Image 1 (cartoon, one colour):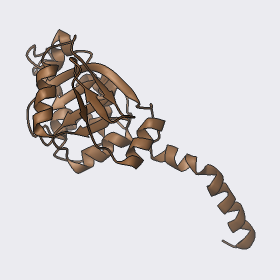
Image 2: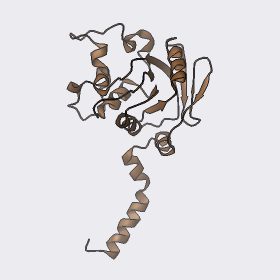
Image 3: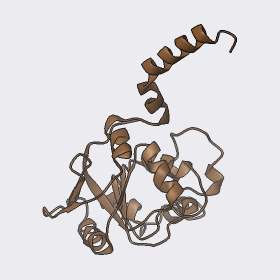
Image 4: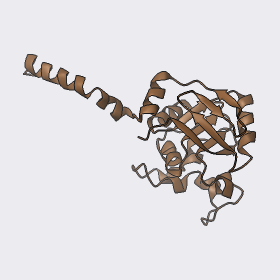
Length: 201
């Protein structure tokens, strides 16, 4: 998993509330167990017509936001059914951070496990970030996980809270397997001791 320290990038404004996981990655794309290749289908039913043509009005189809790395979203982002494919699709598209007033719990947890930083901000701050994002590709926002701040294109700085353990994992690029491997030496010592004291086990 890639480390997340500081990100400066284009922020796409998505003010719609209750963006659920089926909107993020529709069910017909859940057959794969690969984490790559899903970016093209991110927000598929919002991005494309039934015959596969891009819908120009959708924010990520607009030239200014095609390379967005941050989404500033409406309330309750990632609600709906549990599917890890949702953060996979966001990450494969290039999204490393989503900012909203609230997230569905399972989606929120899955983001951290896949290298995406979900940030919860008060409504008034999200509104300001949304307005800043609407300025387009030249209005880049900076997310600093070390300092736990989001800075707008014109220099306004807003702090955010994040769980210390999850922060550690993102800063060091640790998923669940990586966390286990951090304890490899202790696990090996335990196994050797157990083999010596309980050879029958």
